[in-house]
Amino acid sequence: MVQATIDDVPTVRASAYSPDGSRRLWALAYRCTCGHVHMGRARSYGSLGGERRARCGRRVFIRVVRTYPAEAA
Image 1: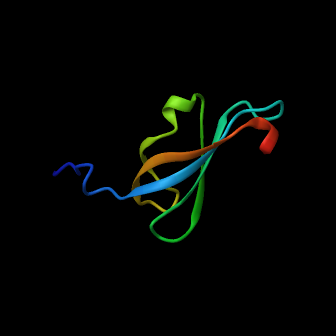
Image 2: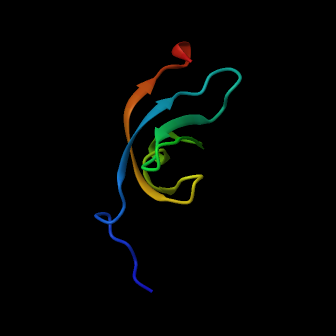
């Protein structure tokens, strides 16, 4: 089995939404290479980025480019 390198996994840009009163986890929204928008969650801001498997099954490397405070959500 050959392990994929970071060059083999496409990078996608994501928006992160900080937790607020009704949401305890960080929320993540990103457009996959398939064209669909996927959502994700994480317990901390540091664990939002990195390699993930999108809901459609594709492996993507997530780079957080925008962070919205709780008031904006």
